[in-house]
Image (cartoon, rainbow, N blue to C red; front, side, top):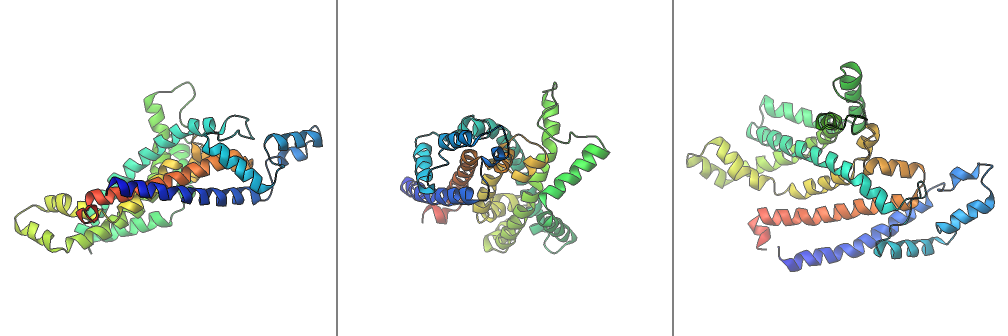
Length: 317
């Protein structure tokens, strides 16, 4: 894929992001309630004080004017201030991005290794009890709600067995590597299991298609071992169709898993989103949503680049 094509894709992403920002802005601001409702029933907060707050955050202006002011500030790098905490939105998001990246990358590594191994094994043993077992396991993983799995793991490994901490990122007073790893195990596993179930089925389907090709039979005829054929010849071609889907899922993992972070009290972007939604913190909500939207669009472009790098037909097309 040439540099011109990449620049064209990036240029096309700009109006797409603008359209997404308008839609998100309308959805967030037209929802029932508002960020100042929490003060409405407080007798110590006068109507004049509420008007000053509305004026400070631009909430008393018409919606189109609010959107124009927000967009102008966003394009200049000013994400505004949190209504809930009064801190800059960019600071709030950046502080939460580190824990989310840690959780997302750990889950991505687990899911990628597990899905490649399980998908390849299921395809190589198509129709066997191994294939049927993996198929049943992945179907269960897709059907299982993430919050339910998280609660079950908390009850089993924290309450009953006491092996792992139930929530948080580290134990207060014990910021060691082992302690941080123990806190990471359950949320990363929950996040990875659901993703692994989907990726395994994609990779299995791709492997089954590739294993029926003539060049695979030729590779076997040359005397190559099954391991060499599967890894060197089949897997590289089988993973190409799944690259775009995996890239989009990676964007979701990195931008924050709302449910997982909320259940495990993980201090990432997902939990920030839940807190901001509860408090109708419009600036933070828009910052998080726009960051997630940009991540998905960028992941789609990166997925196409990866497909072109692995498939010569796309690279020279």
